[in-house]
Image (cartoon, rainbow, N blue to C red):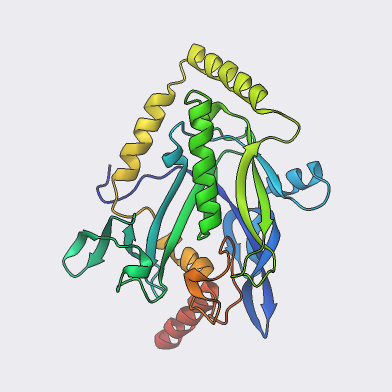
Length: 305
């Protein structure tokens, strides 16, 4: 195994709360009030829709605001990883990741472990480039039992709510989180920081039409069938722990560029990490990642000529 490379859950798609629109000749991210499932392929029109996106929409009336899911791991912290994160907005490289106590920061001397006082009290992250960043991996459908969809967010509301729900469901089910039939739900709220307008965050609950007791019974039955078949959930969780700890940062430079483009754009009066909820993309004037790549390609082509 390559050292320094975090081994993360295989991802076959994305879950987003937003879309790309064209304004003033530029393609910019815009907030939405429903889920969208996409592939990991992006073209000039935006992220390509995943086939499950249409399947789930046909099963729902109106907007897609609930997605049936299961989880890969029994350990809540493996399914949802959240830290204070700072990315280089030009290269997409992560430069500092911390938990409020300690952080790993990339510098001239390599990766250093330093105190992490949180973004508000940190001179390095006070510019607004550092904010909470969470990644949730969920299983949708039965086609690939180890291939997950990734939901990324910089929302305090989503991170806090999902973390609480995951730990609660793990505790009350007797540590059978990976067997519980659950559902991602989109909820709305308004705050003084959002100027009373609606903001949306992601919650987790029992599937619509079911109750908690029934979900626990189903989880125990699935756990028994898996054990009879030789499925070793503890070994899977252990392998995931080893994989995550193998690298200093979870995000690669390939994924980092898209993360910066979606969540860490240059702020334009929206209050930065202190403003409204950041589950989805925001309307800014910063050129998109595709635009920057096109500019670089044109520049290289001009040099070659």
